[in-house]
Amino acid sequence: MMKLVRSLATAFVSLTIACGVHAQAKPQVVLLATGGTIAGAGATAANSATYQAAKVPVDKLIAGVPELAQVAQVRGEQVFQIASESFTNEHLLTLGKRVAALVKQPDVDGIVITHGTDTLEETAYFLNLTVHTDKPVVVVGSMRPSTALSADGVLNLLNAVTVAAARDSRAKGVLVVMNDEIHTGRDVSKSINIRTEAFKSPWGALGMVVEGKGYWFRAPAKRHTMNSEFDIEKISALPQVDIAYGYGNLNDIAYRAFAAKGAKALIHAGTGNGSVAAPVVPALRELRSQGVQIIRSARVVGGGFVLRNAEQPDDQYDWVVAHDLNPQKARILAMVALAHGADSKALQRMFLEY
Ligand code: DAS
Image 1 (cartoon, rainbow, N blue to C red):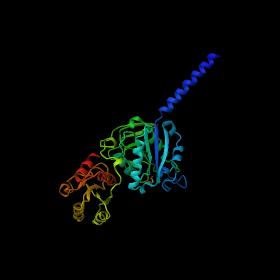
Image 2: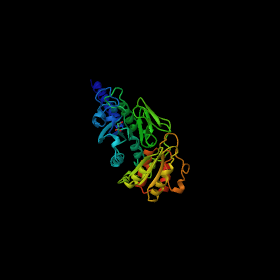
Image 3: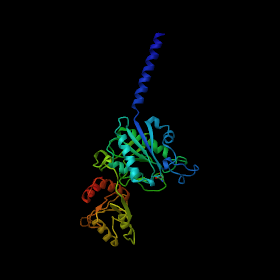
Image 4: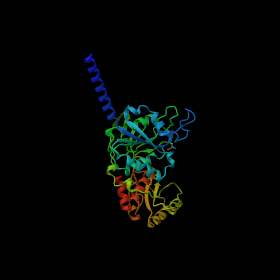
C-alpha cells in the first residue's frame, strides 16, 4: 500500500513540475488591438469585401482562436477600435508609446498589434524606426472579416502570435505577418486592395510561418529599433508632412496649398524616377527657400529607387531623394526625422540608412 502511495505521490510531483515548467516556459505575448478588418463583421458569410471594420473587441479576437493558448500566454488591450485609414499622428504616438512601455516589462516577451490593412505599413514602419527593443513586435491584419467564408484573420493572428513568441524572431525589427509570410515593417506595402495575398515587399519577404513554425530566409538590411537614432520617448508631436501625386498636365496648386497649411515637408510622388514636371519646379524651389523640405519619391514603386541628381539637380536645389521608400513610407520617415531636428543633409543620410 505504502509503495502505491509513494509512486502516486512521485507521479503527482513530477506532473506538477512538468506542468509548472511547461506553464512557465510559455512566452508572454501582449495583443494590442486597434480595429480594422481583422476585427470586422459582415452581414453574411458571403460578404468578404462588404462589411464593417473595427467591431469585434480584443477579448473576442483572442477567444476566437483557442489555439493561441498552445503557443503563448496572451493578454489583450483595446488601444483603439477604428478603421486604419482614420489613423492620425496622435494614434501613432499613443500606440508607439504603449509598445515602448510594454517591451520594458520583464513579463512581456513579445507584442502583437492587430490593425487595419490600409495604413498597417505606415504604423509598422513608424514603430520600426522609433521603438527601442529587440523583442518581437508583430503587426497583423486581415483582408476578410472574421464572419466571411475562408476568413484569413484567425490564421494570420495565430501566425503573428507564433512569430511574436519565438526567440528567433528577436532583433529583426518590427515585423508584419500576413498570408503565411513574414515581412519587415520597413519594406512591406499593401499592393492589392481586395485579395488575401495583398501584402508585398519589393525586396521579398523575410520568411514564412507554416504550421506553427517560422522559417527565415533573409534579414533586414536597414537600421531599425535598437539600432535607430530615433526614439518614440523623445517625440511629443509629429510635424505635418504631405504627399502630392505627379501625373500629366501637373500644376503646383497642391504643393502650395499644403505648405500654406503648415506642411514642413512635401513628398513628391513623382512619375518615373521621381521626375518633377517643369511647371512645378519653380514652386518647389520657392517653398524650399521658405524652409519646406522637398523629398522626391515616386509613384512607380517596387524594386527600384529614386537616384539622387538623376532626374533633378538635388544638390543644387537642396532637395532630398526618398531612395526606395514609397511616398507613404517616405512621409513616416520624414516626420520622425524632422521631429528629431534633421536638416536636409541629415534627412538624405537617413533616407539611405533607414
Ligand atoms: N478599412 C480597412 C482598415 O481598417 C479595413 C481593413 O482592411 O483592415 O484598414
